[in-house]
Length: 368
Image 1 (cartoon, one colour):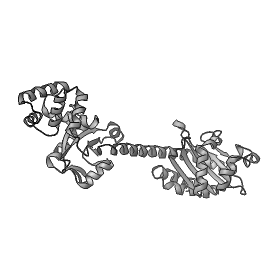
Image 2 (cartoon, rainbow, N blue to C red):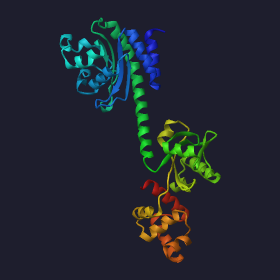
Image 3 (tube, one colour):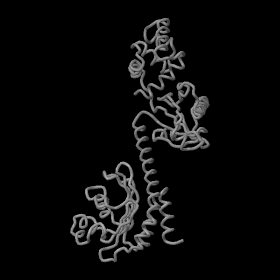
Image 4 (tube, one colour):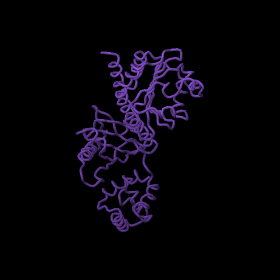
C-alpha cells in the first residue's frame, strides 16, 4: 500500500469517526513533506461544522479559521472546486508578503508555501478547504505534489460530505431533544419490538428512576403489567401503520406519586422507518408531570368551544374522577352532568368517555 492509499483509508475512516482525521492529516503532512495541514468545513457565516488540523497551535489555527469564514475568505474564491493550486498562483509572492492576511494569519502559523484546494462547495454558503503549508524558507510544492493532492481530493470530498451530514444530523438531534427537554415532555424512540433507539434526557432520567418505565432484557418495559401489555399493543399498532383513529394510540401510564399517572402517545416515525429499512421505528411521548384540571379547563374551552361548566367537567373526568363525583363537586345534578357530557361528546366528536379522555390526553400534551 503506497502513501496515497494509506491517506485515503484514513480519510474514509474519518467519515464515520472524526478522531481518525488526526491520523489522516498527519499522513498528509508526511507524504507532502509539509509542516502542517488543515481540513475544514465552513459556512462563511462563522460556523465551523468540522475542523481537522495537524501540527498547528491553537492561536494561529483560530486566526486561520477566522480568516476563512470572515472577511479575508475571499482568497478561496478564485480556486476552482476540486482543483489544487499553489498559493503563489493566486497572488505574486512580493504582493502576498505585504498583505495583512499574510502577516496576521500565515506568518504566525509558520506558513509561506502552500497548496490549497476546495474539495466541495454546497448549499447555504457551505464550503470546504484542504491546505498544506511549509515555511517561507522551505522549497515550494512542485507539480508532482499538486497532482497527488488532486488525486486525493475526490476521496476527501466524499469523506467531508459524509462528515458534514453526520454533524448536521447530530446537531439537529441535539437541538430537537434540547427543545423537548425544555418542555414537560419525555421521548423514547424504539423499534416495533420495543428495543430502544434513543431517549431524551428527561426520558433517561425517568428510566433511571424506574418511574413507570424501565429497560428490561434490552427492551423498554412498563413496570405495571397491564400498562406494559397496553404499551406493546400501541407500539405494534403504530409500527404497523394501523389506520384506526389516533386516539387508539393513547394510554395512561402508572407512575409513582406525586405523578400517579401520565399521558402517553405513540406515533410511527415515517422518515426514521424508511431510513431504517424494514424495521419500523416508533416514538413514545410521555409527560413528566400532570397538568392541573383548572389549567386544562381553559385549554379545553379554547380547543373545542366548551362552556366553562362543560370544560370543568371534561377536565375533572380526564383527571380520573367519575361522573357522579364530578357532578357533586361542581354542584350539579347527575342529569345535568349527563346533558353536559352529551354536549361535550358532540363538540369533541367522541362517543364514549374513554375516547374523550384519550383525546384530552392528546390535547393537553400538544395544545400547551
